[in-house]
Image (cartoon, rainbow, N blue to C red; front, side, top):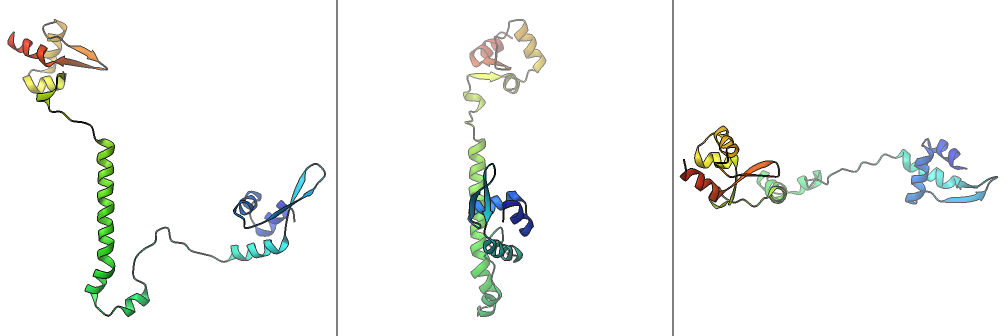
Length: 170
């Protein structure tokens, strides 16, 4: 059978036939055609694959460590034994996963932090916090050159030394 006939026989697309071939579920033989080689599939292999496709297989996305009915029946202890045997190991794994996620979060957002008292350059918000002056007052002082400041990036920055001189002159 050629590729289209095989696809019709299995009830799938020709692309699915190509995927089955890539996965090794079907073997293909090429025979000469009028303009190019034509893919030919073996009828017996198609029959086997059709039977395989008819059977439904369920594969869980996550392997659960929950007890099977035979394990429950053979467990001599009561509920406390079940907790010790099945639930406690899961809670330990859950705790490890939680800790790993937390450490990854802190790694991705970790920035070196320095307190205001140790910074050499201050933002206007930090100057506000230190002095108690309004943002408007600080902007007016910068505009009148009473407070030396410079735009770094998109924000004003004030040297600590310049701020101390401005405060002494108030």
